[in-house]
Length: 77
Image 1 (tube, rainbow, N blue to C red):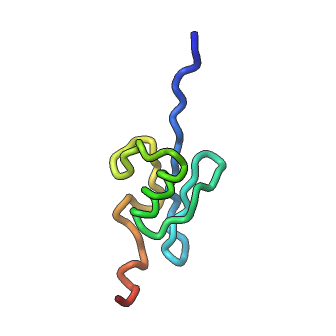
Image 2 (image 1 turned 120 degrees about the vertical axis):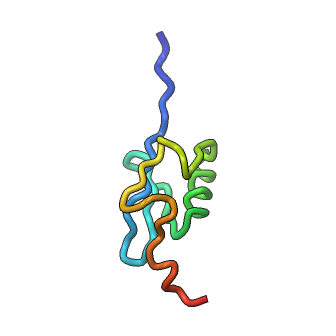
């Protein structure tokens, strides 16, 4: 019997003081995101772009979901 398909466990960590969120796969840091688009790009660069970022059970959102980016509304345009 072959090995079952391994699925990545992606974690988007709770926001840091500057509002950025670390994105990890297991013990590996894939990148630092300041916006949902950053998470999508980080996963694309890690060849994980087949994951539906906002709806996937493979992504664990800590400290808020894909729409929670504290500090963004405080930045002046």
